[in-house]
Image 1 (cartoon, helix red, strand yellow):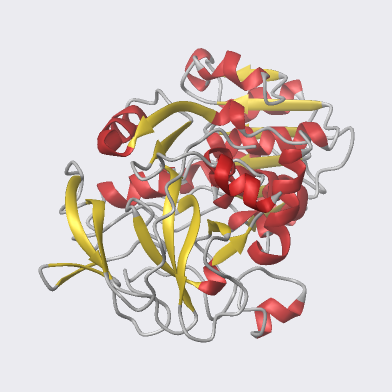
Image 2 (tube, one colour):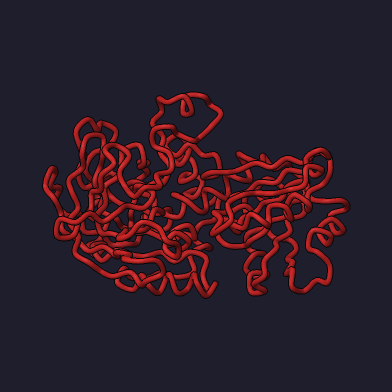
Length: 397
């Protein structure tokens, strides 16, 4: 049973709600707590009372850039359905859900292919609007406030397409499983679905944030014999052991290129390498760290600049492969419930990624901690999570 408190406000379908949201007015500027109006859900949409949300590196990167403003960031979240729009049959008021930044319509060519999780209808939204009508559901004094990844969870309430939410067990702790809506799931999926790591293999991971450490967890659970973590923050070395890292390397401690160090200690290169930093230049280093013949490099990070990838063709002629990974290859609606179940059975770690718990009004502390490299995941708790879940659990029982 979850230990958090929740106050479920009576559903008011087709009526706008006024609530608090942390609004970003400009690149790199502190978020400002504002009273925003949240429109009722339109056809095939649901309005969610956000319970817990966490700061993901991609939120931080977009906030620092010259992105669309004013904007409400946040996409890694859990909550409770407050109301549903016309045509929604999958959800009802009171359902517990995870939000997802890439949806699953279950009908397009990609969704029905069995080969991809890149939905053509509800894929990654970059323009700050809803998928359905290219408009926003947030406003202040009639002026639109833009979305982020069609989720915008740094608000007490948000509206998402029903294809961008996943129903979960009401017994799962929302303040923990919110991490499965992006970072932890993305790393596990990169190891299991995209790379398909095999037992006894050697793995190298560049970047030991939540993504990289989730890859490490996935590699350990697959039985990898050697899991090397590479990071310029020496404090990550000890933390990483808890997730499966067997050897830690700080490139600043070596007089030779890190790829040469890796090739030496792996006996010719790793079977798998993962770029989890968001540095396209590091992709070449990851490729060079792999072995000839079958070495596989997976890139997960979101680049802050220079999105183009360059690499010598000889790396590919000798048998190396480079693959991209979005959300670890998971189909959110089809696959996320099984990850929640694994967590409930204590088969995967989530709690250990949560280094800070922060009240919503202190959300800027989470941004400061990430800027300073002093956190993995900061879980942000909404002020409307005050009344106990005991009554709800009794109703379920």
